[in-house]
Image 1: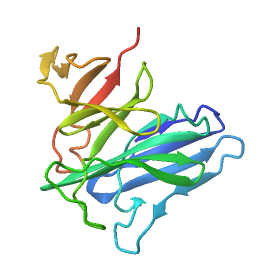
Image 2: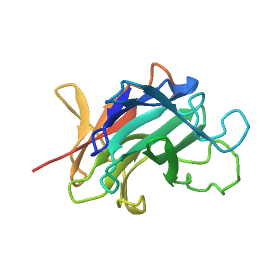
Image 3: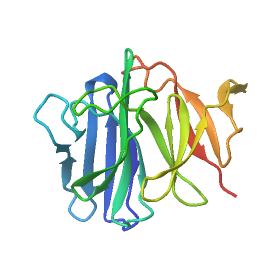
Image 4: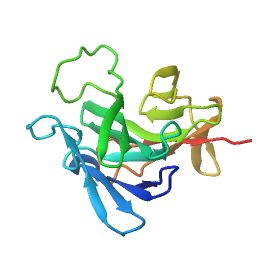
Length: 196
């Protein structure tokens, strides 16, 4: 589960990661206590998305620095030999696709599952924009979701039993098995921003 509140502070978003069984997103109104399921299904097929609680695990949430009433959500699932993920902007009940990263060597085919990198977490970047981490790379995006830099994941070292790396600028990369209970993805990385 992940939680974030927009800068406006009038609601809380709660993301659920049930791995291969989906997940989804809910918004809690802090004034009324009302809970709203947030979805967007563009197609009628089983996993029509980009945000479908039956198929899309929400793996990370952060406040959107560019829009004070919004949050950013990462979606990610690796199942067997396929990967599916994206980063979304959520404002109230409105869901828009910010970015997807095609898996190297894949060609875009509308409606084909398993062509995009699964994002396992988001973190605000101190210098602006935000970080998104996948099973193979760390990405830095500007506030609009445009990819600015890509870093291959570094080799992790054991520090008091925790596998991590401080090799990348502005972040620590950690290894976790938090998704393993609900997915065949195995160990997945998390990103933690460094502050001054």
